[in-house]
Length: 331
Image (cartoon, rainbow, N blue to C red; front, side, top):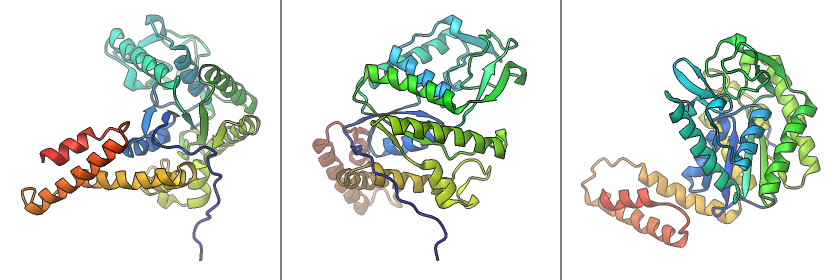
C-alpha cells in the first residue's frame, strides 16, 4: 500500500557540480537548500538582501545587484531606534545609518562581482501578496513594495495580490537585465512549500496559484529556465501535517531532507553525487564527539580522516576543507 504519491521530476539539462558558482535568492526555504549546498562544499552565495518572499522584491534584489546599486541615506528610514531599508531583511538594519549602509553596500558589491560569473541562479518565490507603503510610512515613497515590514505599524502598508501578468512582467524584466550582464547564467525557479497562513488558507492558495502559473509561462518561453517542484513535493507527494513543524507553516527536517534528496537526484550528476557522499562522511567525522578523545583508537580515526580530507583537498583545490583539516590534525 502506498502512503504518498511519488512523481517523476524532469532532470536539469546541465547538472550542477562543484565547480559551479550558485546564487540563491528568495524565501526562507532558499536558506535551507543553501545551507545544505554549503555543507557539501558547493560555491554558494545566498540572499544578498536577506530573505525576500514576493516577485517584486526578488526582481529588485537581482536588478540592484546587476547594477551594483550603492544605497545612500535617502534609501533608509528610522524606526524603533534603528535604521532600515525597505528592500532588505532586518539583518541589514543598524543602530546607526552608517552601519546599515555599510552592511547593505558591502553585500551588494560582493553579490555584483559574484553574479557576473555565476553559473546558476536559484529563485524561490514565497508569496504573490505584496505590501506597498502608504503616506503614513516613515520616509515614505508611496507605492514602494516592502520586502520586510520591520515591525512597522499596519497603517504604513496597503496589501494586494499581484496578478498573473504583473508577475510575468517583473520577473521577465529581471531575467532580461540579468541576461545582459551574464548571458550564460541558468535560472532555477521553485515555489516555496512554506504556507503563508497569515494571509489565510484561501489567500495562500490564490497566491501560490499565481506564482506557479507565471513561472511556468516564463519557462515555456525561455530555454535557460528550469522548474524544480519543491512546493509539489511537500504539498502533493508528502501531503501530511506530520511533515510540518508545530506551526503547521514550515516544512520540518524530514520534509526538507526529502526535498533536498529529490533536488540532488534531479540536478546533480552521478559523479557529483558520489563526491557529495565522500564529503558527507567527512562532515560526519568532523562532528563526531569522541567518548575518549585521548584514546589511540580516536587518534587513528582522526589520522585516517585527515588523510582522506587532504586527498580530497588536493584533488579538488577549489573546495575549502581548512577547518576540517585543522580539526583532524590538531585534536
